[in-house]
Image (cartoon, rainbow, N blue to C red; front, side):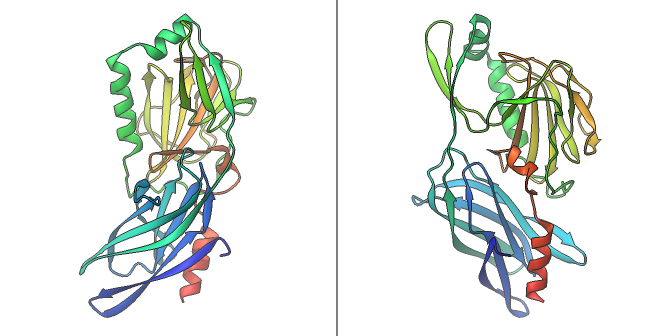
Length: 309
C-alpha cells in the first residue's frame, strides 16, 4: 500500500451517499505505466481515466475495466506514460457513469524523469528507399495497427503479472526510448523515437510468448516485416517485429513460453533482431521494466479491498 494514496469520491446514488475510493500510484517515470483502481464499484457502470498536463491537454487516456478478486470487483485502469512528455506535475482525472448520472474527480500525479540514449543509424540505399518512399500501403498499415492498439476489449483479461523475456540468447542492441537519427544514403536525415527494445540474435532463434494472451495480428508489414501482436489485458499489447517465420495465427490463445516464431531480419532492419514492444492504452512503454514488476499487483488489490472492509 505504500505506493498508493487515497482520494475519496462521494457519489449520490439511489440508496443515499455511497463512498468510492480512488487508489493510484503517486508517481511514475516516463515510459512506465500508471496504475489506478476504484473501489468499491457500487453502481458505477463505466469509467474513463485521463492523465492531463498543466495546459489541460490529455497525454494518456484509458477506460477502466472490472477485475474480480474472490467475490469482490474492482475497477482498474492502466495508462501508458509517454516517453517524450515533460516530467513534472500532472492531474489524473476520472469520469464515472452511474445509473443515476455521472461524476468526475481529480488528483495530482507526478511524472518523474529518466534519461534516454541517442543513436545514429546509417541506412543503405535499399533501406533508405524503404523508409522514405511514399507508399500508400505503409500509411494504410500504420492506420490498421493504430486502430488495433487503441482498441479496448473489457473482457480481455488474460494475464496481469510480469513478463518472461521472449528470446533466450540475445544482447540488447537498442533500447526503449532511444532518440534516433536516421542517416540516409542521399545525405539527408530524420528523427524518431524507438518504441521498443531490440534484442539481437541469430536468424532462427526461437521467440516465445512472454505471457498468456490472444494473437490479434500475425502478418507481414512493409516496415516491420513479419509481425505478431498479442493482447494480454484490455488495452495492453505486446508486439514482435522482423520475424523470419511466424508460428501463430490470428485468434490463437497462447500460453507463457509458447513458441510464436523465430528471429529474422524482415522489414526495415540493419541486422537480425527481435523488436519487442509493449503498448498500454496505445502508448509505448518499456517492456523490460515489466519483466521486473507485474502489470497489476494483485497483492495491492487485496490490500485495497481489505482496507475498506
